[in-house]
Amino acid sequence: MINLILVNQSEKQSPEDFEEIRSHIGAKADDINVHIVDTKARHWPIAEEVSRLPTATVSFLPIRHFESPRGPVFQGHEFRKSDQYVRLRRIGVGVPDWEVIAPDTRLDPDRWGPYVVVKPELGRKGAEVRIKKTSRVRYQPPDEFPEPHPGRKAPMLAQRFVYTGPWASCYRVVTLFGKALLCWHCEIDHGYPALNARYGFSEQGGVTVVSNKKTSTYRLGFDGDVIALAEAAHAAFPEQPLLGTDIVRDHETGALFVLECNPRGDTWMFSSYTGTEIQKAHNIDFRTQFGGLPLAAEILMKETRRRAG
Image (cartoon, rainbow, N blue to C red; front, side, top):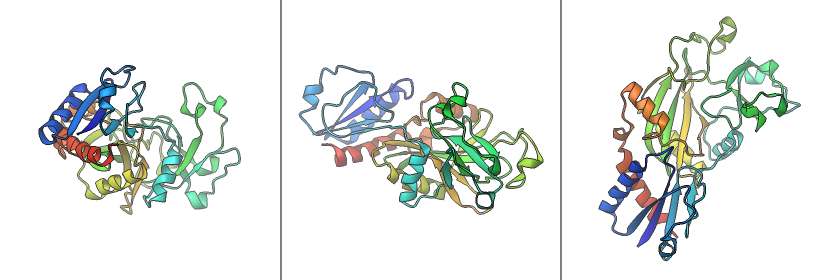
């Protein structure tokens, strides 16, 4: 027998999802004991008993207080975007060129194009992502950013702009140990001005390069090349159980680029607040797309047998 410990954070993942996964595993695997614990648990009465058998612990998010009694622990972890890009480039996954903005940064428009994207190393949900003239990109000391700007905590990045069409769009693929659980495509509300040329920003105001806003349109995504790229990207983070990889497609060339992988693990879209709201608002169901929770159970069975120690 072996143990699988699933660490739940109820504000981000429904405990009922984990119970359903345990039920699916119990129906198919008589060699795996599945235990569900809360991330805040400081004392686990059966810890000593569990420690007698090979064990693997999986937490989609960083564990708060719980300590696994034995075996490897796979949990979400925050990575700066530039660290993600280095890992992805190392395994041959395409990411747009980037540079950390330092005091001596001066970007050449002949190399970068007339506009670049400026965004925080540790930003979330598209916050403080801006398009800026390449020649005007300059370093700003952390204490000059207003609270609670993420630039106060980590550097800002300049990144090559990828033109996704008249209205900004992107894909999100959620993978569990490298296997896709769901994929969506979102496109910015057409109430925003259209960007009718790659660098048409100077012709109009109000254009946004962030696609995942509350008023955006979401649909299930089934693009095989997008899903394959996200699954390949997971290999750059073998210790992370859950990724939510954001991918864009160049409107003119069709080339795909990874923007980030969200390795902290805030991407359990089956029952998170964000995921639930998207499904309700756009009448879509992530659970039926690729197999949902039964598929998650199959993946966890395989990984527990392979990794428990």
